[in-house]
Image (cartoon, rainbow over all chains, first blue to last red; front, side, top):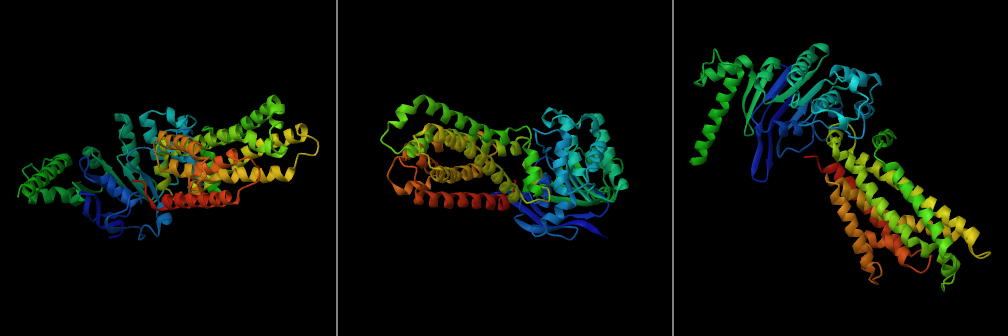
Length: 258
Length: 241
């Protein structure tokens, strides 16, 4: 199996708090990888490490066989990203913001219109980014990630702040991307139902630990084997996920008492 | 070159580009009006006419320049932090230290334009208002270079401080504190105080002679390079968390 992103015992410690603990991920080329976890599980930190925004305390990772920090520029040329909240120049219009990114990436001029069209922002391209609504800023951030159609997309909760129709639209867009062009998507969300509808593979993180990695079927299967009290056959991903997280939290509490 | 072009595009609507030339025009107008109003009193001072022209008008010009530099440095990084744009820059295939250097270059060039405008005004006053044969072009150019070099440590220091603070009030406060402490210490005889970038900038304003002080120039160049080096190192090695 060909993996485009792999992490090896990736760990991030902040003083006496472990945000990410020995996480080893395997993301298949051309797949949509759903990264699940409750708030504070370490999803964003993991993604930040993959983008060089923060340095791992321990462990390593490779994107398309390349490593940070020596291959930083080569890696970032092929990765479109959106982390936590949209990043933009408030003094520039949406189109000017994307033009800045386009120039840095060395892309042709029409790629800006392409990205605006992909996220449904073409008619608002001339408006100042500071005057955008939260949803429009979110779309602008996504357009920045999609600019030039990069082979790898790392999207951290991209539907935050969008209205239901916006969520539906972006979900369909993300789902359609591997069909539109050859790309791999790593997407995190705490909206489990959303990931269920998009992802080919899933990774579940809780308190920095990777509880599960595999396909949805494998998740149901492994939860069933572990004797999870939920009715696995009827359960949706949300039930299975909550069961796993609860079990892990209970085990942690027990360890803490001992 | 592409990085500089990108940086210039980012400055659109921020007011960073016209700010320092505007300070230059303000300084030039101030020098002209001041000399026009106080000509007799100034030329009556027991100083050479060129020393009067350059040192007696420089005090206010220097204060304008200092606040221009402080505000411009705050603004040039505030737009990076305002919409979290700097985070995106760290995620793009570009050199973040290159971006820092471009910002430093832009501010230096804009400040140079301010110094040129101010000195054009001084040149005009010197040629039109000083006694016949008293104006020396060489002295004016030397003093212009001196005032530019002695201002560079503040510019370099302020770019460094503003690049590390997401809150614009922080570098602004540091700038004001630097100005006040510089004012308090500028007349002190201690040579050690030249480590204070704001004291260096104030040195030509408190001197009675237009002759550049080599010790001050040397300290200015060293400090400018040190702050620039520190800023470049931080931009490269301290990651965005």
